[in-house]
Image: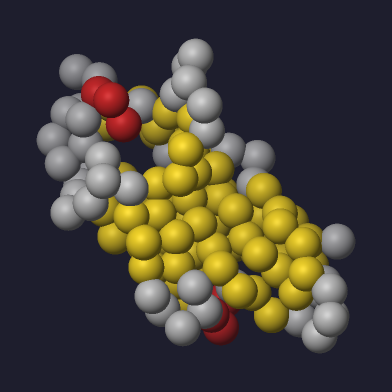
Length: 120
């Protein structure tokens, strides 16, 4: 079993910054892609950013230029640095990881979510 533990959410004023962290633990052989998704009230969950094991990244247009995703493979941890936050960034942010539990088996896991609220 694999667990994803998120931290770093909270209340921030418009224009502020937050850094989200997500640490994977458990029966991990290796981790392929890691990503952050978000879901605002009344909306579908959407991809915010993703990063593969080699370091290539992908961002939603809505956060491009304001956010940076990174990972520490030795710690099985992914980060999301968000700057110039806007009220429309308010959502529950979920960590997602494509984890190999053995050389031949992989599963996608989700974190429990962390609330980010951007408000004055």
